[in-house]
Length: 296
Ligand SMILES: [Zn+2]
Image (cartoon, rainbow, N blue to C red; front, side, top):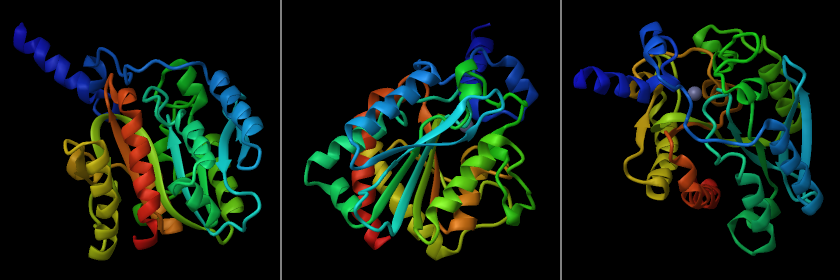
């Protein structure tokens, strides 16, 4: 019995990002990240209050509507008096039950940094833009479900030519990518990060079995990985989805951002029940990433 419970617990620890195995789905006691958050509407309210308080830098964008009609909102942080040349993108809760309470606190932290003379202000004053979409799947988030209300895993709904996936069939992904493509124009998207749960790992392309990055692209991704390890902790595993998670995922956001925009693109898999206590480490990481972007 003891071993059965241990086996169930270890399966449960893997459940959130092992959706494709029906046995694991069946045995999972709780597929949540274990981290509680406010309703989606409260998170949007917070973004709007930031827009008011930091009007020189913040703009809330409603880029579409979810299947159930919730507004899809992100915050764009930029120095409005400067021509934008480069950008980073941060997304969260594309799997609605993988909320970490990091991605929704980052906007306030980035904006508060504009009052200091540090790295973040320099990045913005050099034409840098920071897009943060804290909850990409609000219907799933409010229900703590992985998929959207059409039952679709949104992180398999990105067009990835190399994987032969024609995506953007769902409102949540399609409207985000339409907005980003339009708004970026010729701005270079440098780094993207989607926050997930619960493996404690940093993943880079490709998400599916077969291709590997060129050694140059892999080295550039590994620079960010080493920054993350030194900020978040040496225990963070680094690699691709097939190597670290043991399965092949086609149509993921990071493969799209890398293939389409040439961004260094990542999935961060937070740690179950406790990633929220590492907020300061995430802010250190972002500071270091922005500081080092010039050399990546
Ligand atoms: Zn996930």
